[in-house]
Length: 361
Image 1 (cartoon, rainbow, N blue to C red):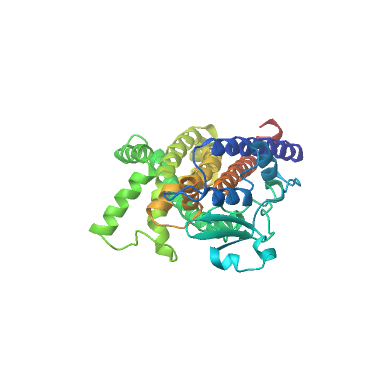
Image 2 (image 1 turned 30 degrees about the horizontal axis):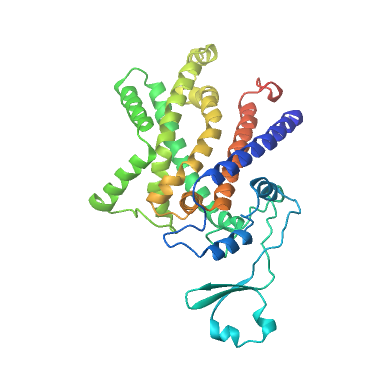
């Protein structure tokens, strides 16, 4: 197991470095910037904001600074922005007039004072994802720390929906193979695979907002707020789990040890729980890793539709606002989650089937 984990750790480092590198340069290649808006800022203000966040550096230098920990800090104009009348500024002593960087803009003079300088980025390697360009009072670590528990709670409810509905439908379809129940369950599963989660969410909002208003369709804070978005997010994965469970159960139920158990006169429910279920859910276990990652990353649209302040909503906002550091932080977070969950699934797979060796996977 230790050699397997060491190899996974090495590949994790290579994968994370590749994701960070590609994402960093792709985001910088997109037109526009985090300080663009409908009303264009004064060029001097844009220059000072760029210097404040090291955006005036060459890309390779910004990349090394973002990786960190590298001592790449540079002096720049920073500190406080003071707007004052020109007459009031000229009334000051000459020594105070010389402090800071002044720019004439209309009837006022914009003065940049102080020696705070650019805020240093600790770097991804130290766990510091940097400050947010739009949420000035928060770092990316703060935003993720506040929103990730919300996304995890929503994902847990969605995964619970997927497992309960998917396993029940899959087992029932395998037990009543060839009947109308089997046909109906397979039809529903196919429909669930075909419909995206945002389409299911739209139907749920129309149903429970206008026809049967018994559940809230937006907001966060109470348990009932998780029912509809959790179902909409987990329904497509429940359909996949149902198909996998049916296939796995049919394969196990046709094996010799199941026929032997039936020949001995064991009850059907005991054969199902003791002999068939453990082997029948193996395909589901292997699917749980990408399914969990898909639930977390697929919550982007669901969180926006239901007004949930999770990580997905912040990721969408960061793309719209060109918030480079927040987009990179969420991308890194999703990469870590996907890789970690896949590794945990491989470990759980060996517990269910001791014939599988980690060194060979």
